[in-house]
Length: 97
Image (cartoon, rainbow, N blue to C red; front, side, top):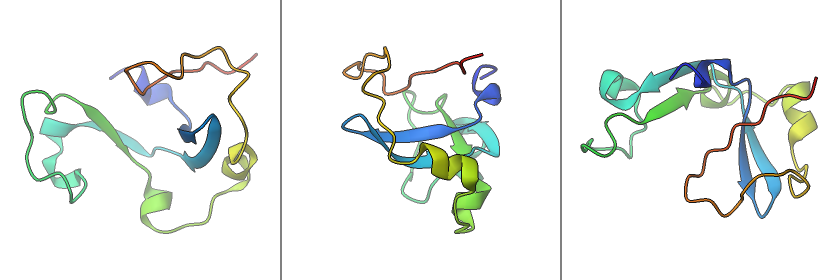
């Protein structure tokens, strides 16, 4: 859980293209924040209760993306050295300094 607290943006990627950008405002463990879970999650299992999820208040309130979010939209990640066929759909990228 500590690592995700430093995540500034979460990208939804399809065919190596960033199709959505989220800016998490808070992170939660499923079993500790049942009231914040998406409506389609009707029950937690042993397998899912310790998963973490984020809330993007801007997205939840239908706010338009800000300039940094717009910057990343529709950019390709094809040139990045990430295993795009990995079983785990999560990849952490550290910013270039």
